[in-house]
Image (cartoon, rainbow, N blue to C red; front, side, top):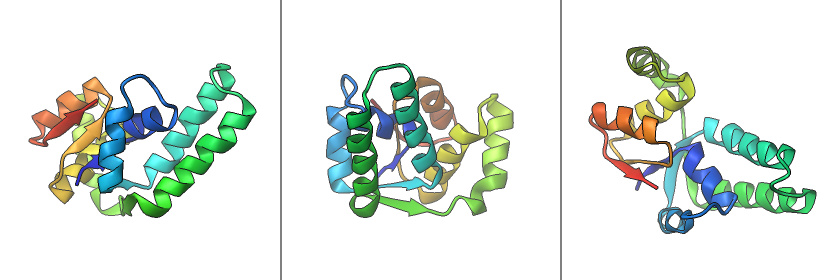
Amino acid sequence: MALIDASALASYILKEEGSGKIREYLAQGVMSVELVIKETANAILMATKRKMIGSQQVEIYLGALKALLKSNIKLVDQRDILEESFKIALKNDLTIYDAIYIASAKKQKIPLLTCDKRQAKVAKGEGIDVIEM
């Protein structure tokens, strides 16, 4: 099992190039933090604003997100990793959002599944196995 971040989940939902491999991990089941819902929805919103997708696609993509959350993504509580996330963010000049995924993967002792190269580098520095897409 892996912990998926919003960059990987959004890439899969928006059908970005190379995102097909993410399907394999989702089929097996992944974990994430509740933040992934908001960040992925925001990625769909930004794709809409940039005219990359139309209103019909929005419904499909939001529906896909909701379906994955029901069956393939186990959400874990992020409240108990706030301090660790803050330390990681401060130490590595990273956003708290990215640090939350790293701290959660660290706590769960599972790899981080991400498309974010900077986040991947920091995660590796924290001793976390990373699956880069």
